[in-house]
Image (cartoon, rainbow, N blue to C red):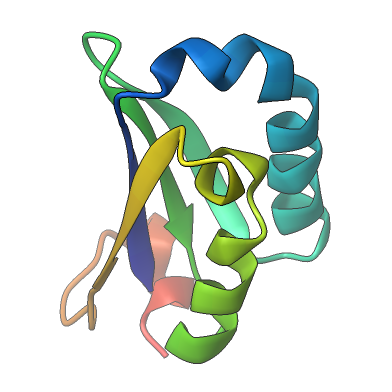
Length: 95
């Protein structure tokens, strides 16, 4: 599984103009069964996505397609986690 952080860059002011495309990118991730959760990093620092059911290479490609990344509104960092122990409700993450 992966945690993707999308931290605002100096170009944060461009975000409102790109929000529709960013939301469509998020929707595709959920529709494709890759994204499990998305939300804001508080306070107003960017966003984060929990992803699974994909390879790191494929996720890197997907992240590069986010309009916020393309237009340098955010910088993306991908943290890969190999779950060793989970709550029963998250057992599906242990692959």
